[in-house]
Each structure stands twice: as structure tokens, then as C-alpha cells.
Amino acid sequence: MPSPHGPERPRAPTSAPLFEHPAPGSPPIEHVEVSSYRVPTDGPEADGTIEWDHTVMVLVDLDAGGERGIGFTYSTEATAELIRGVLAHLVEGRSSLEPTRLRATLDRAVRNTGLPGIASHAISAIDLAAWDLKARLLGLPLCTLLGKVRDEVPLYGSGGFISYSRDRLEDQLSGWALRGFEAVKMKVGPDPATERERVHVARDAIGPDVELFVDANGACHPREAIALTRIFADEGVSWFEEPVSSDDLDGMRFVRERLPDRMRLAAGEYAYRSYDFLAFARAGAVDVMQADATRCGGITGFLEAAALCEAWHLPLSAHTAPSIHLHPCCAVTCALEPAEYFHDHARIEHMFFDGAAMVRGGFARPDEDRPGLGLEPKRLEMERFRTS
Image 1 (cartoon, helix red, strand yellow):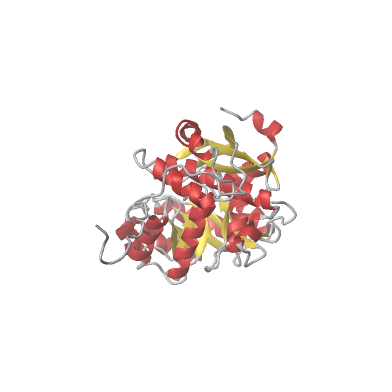
Image 2 (cartoon, helix red, strand yellow):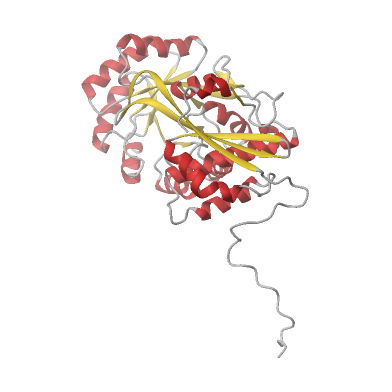
């Protein structure tokens, strides 16, 4: 019987199908290749919670329309296995011009696997490769495709590991200051006596005009962190990163509300999706939001974090992977803090890629003569580090 209200409208599906065919005129993604590389550090490294002697990069290649896009994450070989076993078949055949739709499909695919952690690293690498591929197919640098609002990105030098000798700490931080970085960051632990000396050494090395940041990597309890802030304030520290675990939003807010004047709390590197960033903002836990495109869902997730920062009037800083972050940082419209020029990742990216981020006077800018992310793998040089 016909409805008295007229013909029924077709109902929208409750969720998008897991697999959709490419849009007309959009070359399908033909092939997914994933590889992993284990690179030894150039010396013992440690922060306030862990020690390590190598870094693993997982690289994703996507082919479509005669072009190849690349993306990568710093993670573990298990990330590569997840891509091969769970995600690759969902990527092949998909539109090469719709990276955001692809990201949504991959998110749904890991519902029962668990999205945070390794799964987010895997999806981030694929999303980065998808955006790189799209920009290459269109013959554009990624920053132009995204909508550039600035030409260059300020950076801060980051390292200063707890395992460093006094000489190595001085040499590294003073080297960045001499290269024009306006800020440098060092790792710190929970022991006040040890950190009083190390931070004093750092301040002497960089002089009075360079900002000094510290990063505890969640090593402290809230009251331990408050005790450290008094020491750091004496040396002009202006940025305290992850004084307590990022899982402890109440503890983060407790520390933030008691920071000395001119010191800000930064965190967000372990946020995997937009609702994680929203939780930081709602809790009043940070002064500076950090986002890492190699963890938070690639370019798509980084732009989501930037939109949230703009809505909550929070500045954004990119975490590690400097060669990845130049293009999206040039396109975000929220307030932008210096991006992290992390020692391990900067070293690996210059070893592995032509077009890696080049620093001039504490700033870097994308190479707009190159399409996409502007990175070309040095595959022969990479091969000796390959694990899969």
C-alpha cells in the first residue's frame, strides 16, 4: 500500500562498504609493497624510561598510473607484517585519488585488531603513501595540493639523550645553536640532582638566547615533575614535554596548572586519532599539542589534529620524522610551533632519501620542484639495512 506521505526515500546504508571501486577517471592502485629496515643508532641512546640501540623504518610503496607514492613510519617489523597480512589486499584496486576514503576503509578493517599502536602506524604509512601518490599523479608538491599557507617551517633540534656523555651533550646542542636553531630539546629523567647538572650544562652550551626544551617521556609522577620544574625554571627552560604519562590526563593537568611562568607543557605524540587529541584538549592537559603523522593516521590524521587545534585555540607542533612533516605543516591554518628535527630520524632520512629536510637558519621548506613529498628512496643504500 502506498504511503500517505508520498513515495519513500531510499535509505542510506548504515556504514560504507568495506571495498569500493575507483571513481571514474581515477587510476586504481595496482600494487602495494612493504619493506622494513633496521638502522643501528650512532651511539647508546636512552630517555627517562627506555634505552635503545636501533630504529626500525617501515616503508610502503603504492603504484598507480605509472607513478609510485611512498610513505613510512618508525615502528617495528610487526607493522610490516600487519600491512602484508591484513591491509594490502584492501588497498590494491582502490582509487589513487581518494586517500581519505582509503584511510576510513583501513580504520574499519582493524576494528577487532585494535586501532592504537601498531595498526595506526601501519595505516599512517599507507595514508602517507596514498597522499604522496595522489600528488605525484597530479604533478604537484603535496603542500600545494593541501593548500599552502606558509613557505617554511621553524624547527627545533632534538636529542640530548640521557646516555650521552657531557661532551656529546654539549657538542650536539651547541651544534644546533650554531646552525641557527632557535630552540633545542634534551631528554631528562626524574632525579633532580642529575638533571640539575645536565640542564645547566645544556644552557651553558647553547647560550642565553636559544630556547631550551626538556622531554621526560612520561618518566615522572606529578609531584616529581613539579619538583623538577623549579630546577628547570632556573635555567630558563620554556617547554616541558610529557612530564608524566600521556595516559594520565589528570596528572598532566595537575602539572600544567603548576608550571612556572614562561614554561609550557607539550604532549600528544601518542595520540592515534582525533578523539585522542580531543581528550587532551578537553582535559586542559597541554599548552602545545603534538601530532605525529607517522602514528596518528598519516596526512589525513595530521590535518584532523590541526583542525581540532584551531577549534580549541591550541598551537600545534609536529613530532619527529621531519621530512614527512614539512608539507602538512606548510598547509595547516592553526598556530604552528617549531617542528621536531629529531636526531635519529633526521639522520636516517638523509641516509635513505634524496630530498630529505634541509635546515637553513633553523627553518626548512619543501622542495616545490619535486612532486608529492619530494622524497626519492636511495634503494641501493637502504638494502643493507633491510630486514624484510
